[in-house]
Length: 428
Image (tube, rainbow, N blue to C red; front, side, top):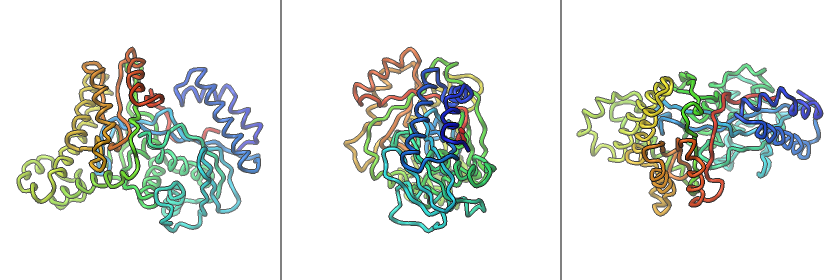
């Protein structure tokens, strides 16, 4: 850990500039902006807490889902990546058990790391994530303790890039380095983060978001055994294929969507239960289709459609990874388009039936198709219902595409992303 002057000097050093260029895929201007962002965070930390001489800095990225829409909670396959938007934390290890996290723009969170009871009033709020991560550490025999942290995030809440997973993984990474000598592997931190979100925060999520944030880079993940997910990095650079990876925030209302998300998993499991299984990954695809007549009436039609989506997108995620490894980007785009059609028609997560008048995702997909037909690819991104779409846009069309989208959805709704080569890390 460093003193304040040492920390600022290190942030401004050539070595850190080189690291920022790698982590954020940034040019000189972008590196300078990151250095200023980190120095700002140090200053805010010193304003909120007594100035310390033993601070450390951590970073955890947001993620983008490339393939496998709602397959992870059924122990399926996904293709995902850490991105160059992240949550950073300036931290100081305390001598007691109290954790104080002040996130820019939000009220402080206070958590006693010795109190692992579930606090119902924290459900859906960040203190639940901090408490849940501490609980997950203790359940696995790891150490926890107090710390102060000031965080700044470029992973906007509700952006579809999983700000909650980045925050959970960040807390886990801090505890890993401050109290466990950095010995805990990224996948274990991801599993602990998922436990926190499911058991304490109250969101029935899969494991993809946390794994992509913890591991970083381009990863193909197989959750057939969720206690030991198989994570394989995929060497691929979008710059080599002449396309930009773009996320568009459709400005939908994210309130009260937990029931929509939960229904997907519940309906998929209802189909699996007809075969005496817990999740669809355990069900034979051919047996599912062979027994369709017997299944209809036992479960809802929507459950059957969502099962069809799972089987197709689970296979598709593996093909997408293989196509990227082979450098066949045109075929990869066709798989992305097929995934998007399946999400809309079978999974049915393009909008919420609770608010049928709000269809920002279908509208944005329609506008995107009109401009990129025959040139790019597009799909629902992440959980769906309200939120973001993903598009692979030919670089020469990106400025026009951004102008078109933002004319409808507003400035700042279109984000061109880069893949981050590392996951959650200690920066200094």
